[in-house]
Each structure stands twice: as C-alpha cells, then as structure tokens.
Image (cartoon, rainbow, N blue to C red; front, side):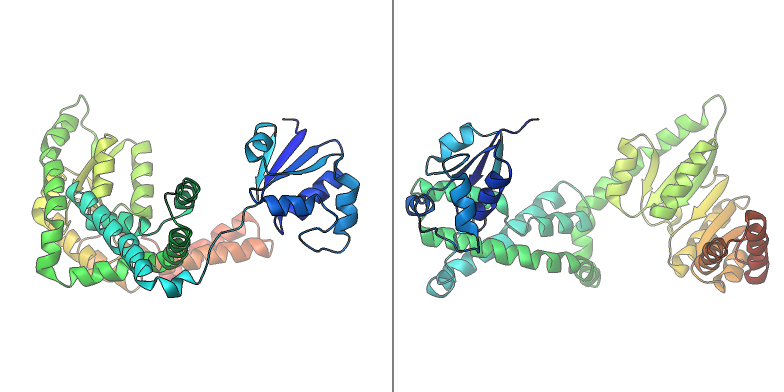
Length: 388
C-alpha cells in the first residue's frame, strides 16, 4: 500500500513534534494533525508553538503550509488519510479520587466483585469446572480500552460528566493493575475452597453431574470400538497434562487406542467432543478405571506427579487386570523400586531424564560425536537406573 497522506489525532507533546519530523523528512507525504482543541491548533499555526523542543520551530517552519497542516476538522482529516496515527493523551483529573471516593469504591465494587461473581455463576451454571469458572471470573475483573471509547462518546454526547469520565479511567487503571495479582490468587483460592469439603462438594456438584453424563456414554463408545473388525489394542492414560498428551499422540500413531482419565472436566469434554475416548473422575476409584475399560486394556500409563496417587492407581488397576502392562512417571530415582514393586513394568524418572538431557547438551557443546553421546547415555542409564 502506497501512503501519500497521514492523519494524526492529537496535537500534543507527542503528536505535533512527531508529525512535524515526518513531514520534514517525507516531503512527498501530506501530513495533517487534527485536534478538537481549537486553541491548540491555533497555536500550532502561529509563531508561538504550544510545545518546546530544540530546533522544532525550524522543522515546523520548513514543512507547515507545504505538506504539514494543523486542523480542528477531525472527520475531514481522517476521511482524506491513507494512514491514521492516534496520539491522544488520557483526560484524567486525579482530584476526583479525593472529591468522589465513594463513587470510586462503588465502581471498583462493580468491576472487581459484582462482575466476576456474575461471570463465575454463569460459567458454573453451564457445568464447567470450578477452576474454569474462577479463571473466567478473574479475567473479567477489569475494564479496559473499550470502556474508554464508550465513556468518551458518552461525554461528547453530554451523557457523562467530566468527573464521571475521570472516575471511570481511575477504575480502569486500578482494575488493570490489580488483575495480574488476582490471577496469581486463583490457585491459593482453589486450595482454600478444597479445604472446605462441604462447600467444595456443593460447588462441584453441577460439574460432576456433567462429568457423570459424559461417563454414561463411555460403555457404548468402548463397545463400538471393541466390536470392530480388528479390536484395537487400548491403553488407559491417567492424567492429560503435557506428558499424557504426548503419550496419547504417540500411541495413536502406532495403532494403540488411548482412553484418557482426568479430573479436569473441561479437558474430558473437549476430548469427547473431538471424538476421543475420555472418562471424568478420580483414577484411584475402581469404578472410574472400569468405566475406562481397564479390564480389556493392554497398557496403563500413569502420568500424574503425586506418588500416592500413582501407587493407588497401579494397585487398583493390577487387581482388576493382572495381565496389564503398567508404565509410570516418577519424580525421583528412589521411587522407581517401589513402583516396580507394586506392579509397574517400566518407570521413567524426572531426575534421570534431566541428567541425560544435561549430559547430551554438554557433550554436544564440547564437540562429542553422536556415537560418543549414545555411549555416555548408556553409561548414565546403567549408573542411575534412569530407564527401565
């Protein structure tokens, strides 16, 4: 796109000098600076400029009247422009914080309390998880740029007083500032709610009902898969974080049908809507494992990080299907022996994989060839028992 005309909205400390420099350096481009403040436009068209920058008067004198123009006709300037810059300062009177403190507190109460609470209730009523409802509520606990546009139009139409506009801007600044802190508070708040068993159970009743409805469809879906011409090998994956997602993708490439068990209702719903097999619930419960088809499964992959959960899941699964091949994730090398004792055929430890990963990086850094790298990896595996 060839630009032959530019409009800048705002003839203040930024817009005026910037456009003057563009006009001086690009004489083939018509530059128009528009501002609703008539006195400021008059000053830019006079010998006494409204701002002072060393050498600015000479730059303006060079371009003004040739390809640099200052006008109060905002609509006309925008209509004739190929490119529009917006350089409008915030019209904010800080004295309203002192003169109208209760109005400010009222606005903040609406933005930080009423609005997110309403959002939470709507998302909760739609049977999404409490975590999703909290995330949506916090995301909406602020007002931003669009509110400035609405307030500006209301002020120009004399529907909103100048004090009201300043209060709205103050509310926006404060809510945007506080919002990152609210996001950091989601996890502690969820832990606090979990510490109130009755209240937490009441909050989760709707989402769990939605999860139960999804689980009711699983027997029919599993039966349809198993009654195919060649019943596929199936693997139950407990946990659908980054590790579970990677395992699921790889298994599908090699013809193994994954069935995911996860406590995140949103994850299970998304998987079900995409045509994948998924069960909502706690994998330590035998009925949840049975709903996932553990009795007919060939493999079980336990990807959750908690040691106690891994142990209970493996014990329950092996009791339901003694021929099951179990592969588990572990954080520490010392956990491997215990997981193998309770039935895991293979254990991958985070400590061991970190040691191997760092060794590979260092060996490549010092120029070792691939054969030497593979040799060192085998030595580390033997030393740490990192894989098996």
